[in-house]
Image (cartoon, rainbow, N blue to C red):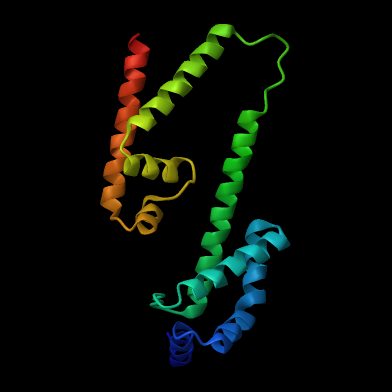
Length: 182
């Protein structure tokens, strides 16, 4: 990182609003253009970039940038854009699941009952898991966070996340196997 960037970052860490605003004004439009090229939506791109700067300000005291400040900002805009796209895909998928498919014939009642049984079985299995394991599973499978992101969010190691996910998946597999044997 060049000396000028290091000095600017040091000032920002100390809460210097003017340095932060200078950083914002210097990179904002370029980052918005980049995010818009990834997302295709100007307003969403602006929100994504504003989140990048919000997180920098919020975490300014602990922020560590090893290389270039510009690279860090563009990587953050990329990551935030990808998180937004994943979230939208999940929400769209959930909407698709909640929309009944148009059918000419009525659904088979036994399939409806079986689906309810499996849904209840999954819920019960997850409810029996320890709270931390359940939370890790939810963050991964429902919010789409990666193991590294979960570890950072919960202040635990990636290995702990892996172990808890293994427990949750094993419990679900065992429940499904018992259900299939009935």
